[in-house]
Image (cartoon, rainbow, N blue to C red; front, side, top):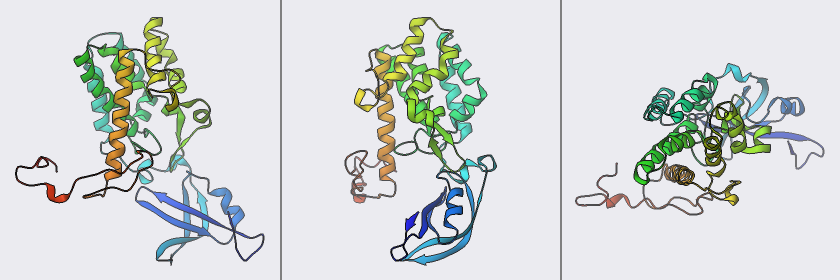
Length: 300
């Protein structure tokens, strides 16, 4: 609620209405207190009002608000879809898992993803609420990118293919508990705020880890706990195995390159705006660099 400049002890509501198509500023001038209680951040509502122009921009003056149950809405109506469909992500996930030779790693992943709730949410959840892979299916897309890189690294540097694949696919599994879908957004849960996705991921995997030898289970947990790479980046321990280093480096690469791609969206040539997460601007090159015998001929 925002106080009026010229009306003591009186307030209006100022907020942003948002769905997958974009966002629009909103205001409530009457019934402020009752409507404020209905407009919880991240939850879907039905709005009745009128669209007006204010300072060369559109806004909606709200007359009435009706709450909507998260179960009544389609996530696609409020959150952008990623570049891959749920079916495509599911097929890639199964392909990566089935590339493993018959081993405890293969059996472990089959058991985890045979849990229908885990599989369904894994293919729906974002990897983050901002910064990178913050769209429907972002968690699966990011984890698959990490796994595909790690499988390449495993062949090049003679790592355990089973361990590095398990670690890559499950390093962010705790985000299924760190975030909850409120109907119009993914928001941090209280449990997520208190414990973070690394701890929550290990707790989610306890029923499956208990079936493994102690040292094998410990190495999977180590990859999850160390995948941010540095204590100042949120990892309680540093990577201490080849497989843990591989997952950390692949995780970093996936997150950073997708962030760069996001920053460059809509930038046709020259420099992007400064990005506070990358701590720099990004150079795209000039449009006229493409041409005969150019290094840039292969760019679409």
